[in-house]
Amino acid sequence: MTRKKVKLAFITNDSARKATFKKRKKGLMKKVSELSTLCGIDSCAVVYSPYEAQPDVWPDARGAHRVVAQFKRMPEMEQSKKMVNQESFLRHRISKAADQLKKLHKDNREKEITHLMYHCLTGKGLQGLALPELNDMAWLIDHNLKDIYKRIETLKKEAPPPPEEKTASAVVVDLQRPQQQQQQQWFSDWMGNPGADQQQFGDAGGSGGGDEIIVPFNDGNNHAAAMWSNVFFP
Image (cartoon, rainbow, N blue to C red; front, side):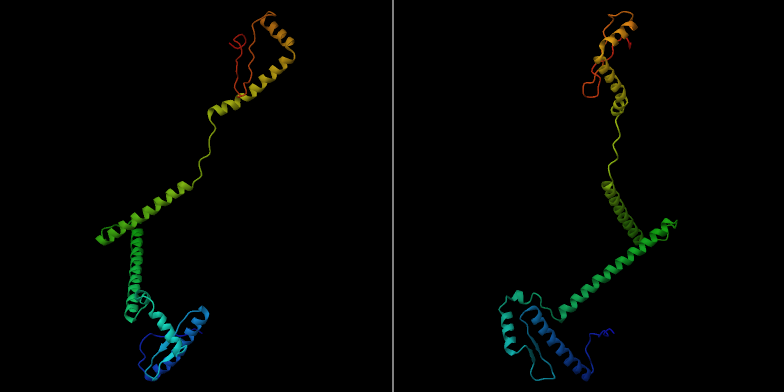
């Protein structure tokens, strides 16, 4: 079962206020003791009340004097650096609440203008809108367009590069490679038995000592270094 939230306000009933004081004072002393023991720091607590003549001190009067003297030896700026009173505490709470309220107003206004913009996209006219609504809608549209353009640029940077296409020269080389291999094989056979080929081409040309034949060969770069003579391939 959760504890009921207590309203932070002055307790007008005397008996209830006295009972609350005793209960909270005991809890405060316990928390100071736990803080000092767990964290190993010097701390003290002094509580004055209208119900007792002497103040309650933790851990004792001597320990409280030592902690207070240590505090007074600090520079004045350091002493008041994190010190707050009731007025400054309330001012801080009011300022924080005002900032939260301003943020809620802005969020609600943005939702209203977004809803109105969607209505306009469905065909509703802008005749009944006042100047503040039009200005807010223009700002919202510009803001959304900036986000869209930014997202497009991000996607363009993250997109992989297009695949490279084969060039025309590469395709021509691939088509000529079987023919070159065949010519190289013929040249190897001719070197092994030159007489038979010479006789064959001599008969075809009409004489044994016909024109010279220029045999193509590969220069190591998949390109023909010489062409056939015009006798057979005009």
